[in-house]
Amino acid sequence: MREALKSLEVRGLVNIKTGPGGGASVARVSAEKTNELLWNCFFSRNVSLENIYAVRKLVEPELAASVAEHLDEADLQLMEQSVGHCSLQGFQGNDRAQRIQELDFHLVMADSCPNPVLAFFTKFILSLLARIIIHEELNPDPDTSAQHSQQGLDYHQALLLAFRERNPQKARQVMIEHMESAESFMLNINRPKTSKLIHSHH
Image (tube, rainbow, N blue to C red):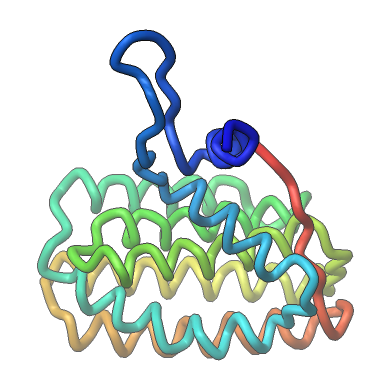
């Protein structure tokens, strides 16, 4: 029993308090810990970019529509900072870093989503994509990559306009086009056909 409880404690699933009145209690599992457990589930499977974008194209347009009327000025400022940061970086240098930075815009939306289930699954899909971007050999043509980065900025600016107009329908349509563009770019660069997610502990 002690070994089983210790194992659960190490995994962050229970809290153990020693001394009088102590004992084991169920821990409140964080989103980060839940993601780690889900990553374990996918670790031994081949996960393709096609798999990820099949879900991303369903989830993110609804995410954009759901937050359009809920974003406050602080959220919009964070998104504008993300757009500005990517723009200042230019379209050269570390393409992998550029792709990761572009995901920050989407994470702000997820953090602001009034639906916790939609927010969680968006973040999980983004985390899968980020792991593939970080750990795979992705070798896009520099000119194609620069064009895609400019298109991404244009879509993010269009989304910001829809959010400031508090227009869910417009936000959904822009995100649909954005996801189709992102999928086309990612599926056509030089890369492995399938991806094995890299397991790591933080």
